[in-house]
Length: 84
Image (cartoon, rainbow, N blue to C red):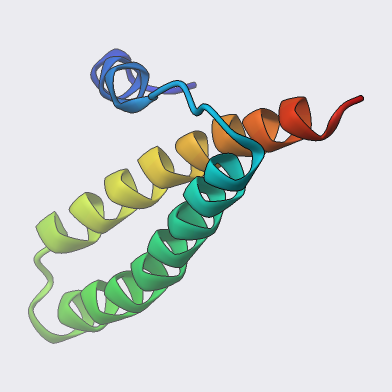
């Protein structure tokens, strides 16, 4: 279940996309953000092993969850543009 605050943030970040090319570009950008999140998540996990503070890991997980939700919406947008 998505926390209400996160769901509201995601809803406010979704922008209608005009063209097929823009839809694909937006999805590719989101996927690059998800890839970058994996690096941040690995770093945050290392920080937890070093000092036991989970705050950076929680923030990285929240960012990843938001980007995954947005990627799902953007994937649907690309599908919409590809349908005849």
